[in-house]
Image (cartoon, rainbow, N blue to C red; front, side):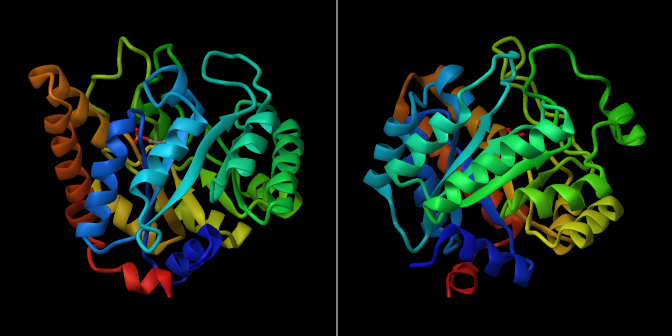
Length: 301
Ligand code: 13P
């Protein structure tokens, strides 16, 4: 069985994306795994700290246990998404403790998110996280640039963000950050935004984001790392496909499969029906949006 790092290296080399599906509700694990298996693809199942606090993923251990219950190691692997140094509500987090707990438990890869810190502090915090993860032989993702959307306050108008490049990952900083942190994968900001998570806005339809592909290419060339696109839901398909050809090896997807689950649950009060809605949308993401049905053998050999 390959490590998460080897899987992503394979995917990156061949221009195939590894979707990383967040599961803010534990019953989403089963339909996500089923959709990956039925489409003969490979994906990560992921949880982020905010999904234990703001949704019903309950914690590192419950997600780990739910994953192990449905695990099909030839098709899926477990990833710990966003462990922030400063969270979306501006609270400092004991990020090394959280990472250590996940690594002890057996998560296959982890992410440190120091993106709310000034550059130098992000670099130091990320380096510490990378050293910790590498001590376990586990890959560590880090983030540079501002992928907005998780914070509760209003976001600047999307067209303004995209046109100005505000918060985009800086190329010179990315070169230094990759070299000095030793991170395995880098999450970049190139026009992508996260789906909203505050209770007031989480039901809203996401903006149909665009991506600056030219900027992505310069980041790929500067870092030499597999790059990660957060906020995968709702990105215009042509852009996402071009991004995968130009350095993006992993795309995080949550809102796209979370909202159908929530809507179905609200309408029917039946978890099986909500799981079916989640299954169908996950299949759609894999087969119709990314177009990677049948590619499992290519990334797992
Ligand atoms: P979306 O909810 O926009 O798909 O973003 C998910 C994500 O990036 C999790 O890290």
